[in-house]
Length: 404
Image (cartoon, rainbow, N blue to C red; front, side, top):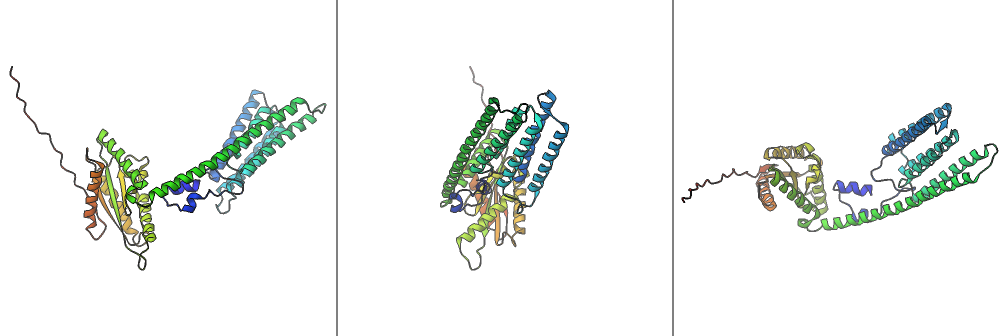
């Protein structure tokens, strides 16, 4: 799902196999979307810090007792294991184990430290249950369904061993009903978390399937007739919103209509080659657009998209003709530098138009298209702007006073 989201947000075309095939899972299960080893390590480190603070507060309140030497050993051991996981997260991606394997190792180590903490402390009953529960919750969606169940069983066995050993080491050694009740309650908590984790896994897979289906529909709607494509309708919707904002605030905005003249590849008239070149031009222009090109920097890259097979529209909110011209000049200059490399044989033209208060979206696009047509008359990359008419003054009519 993360791979599909990244491909969609960067407007990279998806094949039918990528749209319909489920997300490949690792041996132990899927990792959360957008998760990285370093982000996962930060979560684990935060959990350790939180439980350490709660343990210190319990000691200060007098509800928990733990020898200083034992506490020092625990802190050194937890610090050493976190240093190991830190270097694992910072290692080369090719040398890193799968994310699910790292999560499994963190859960096993966490349960081991929680068990040792239970042995070395007195009066940490509820705190121990919370530590075990947080470890199992951390494993949800980071490991597979069966691995999650095994982690829950491991936690139950560890908790049961701790309570039984503590009960048998007392004077006299005896296992009471209260000890068995605590173990059963803890097992019920772990069972509930495991069942909830299974439901979350099923919901995650269903959302993945629905996401892939919606993306397939989007891809089908975006193919064929470009004039009615989803992307073009999205750009027109953004343009309408900017027009309404300008009508309310009287702050100008401009559009830049780019046209890519792609020279045919010698010995190849294949349409896929032309489509790949057009996609490369779109990605290039999108990467050249900067947030500083517009005073309205939030989501600015969403204001750019294809208008036809070889035409692209960039909407520049709160920008006049001068600012739009500087933006277009920088993009065309960068395109000319890449003509011998990535954009071989591509000539880029641009038509700029500033919105006139009260005009329709079609008129604005028509003026930008006229400017683009004049730019295309040149044999090299060129920018043309639609002329802004002089402001019209209202006619003054003298009113004769009415005589009674």
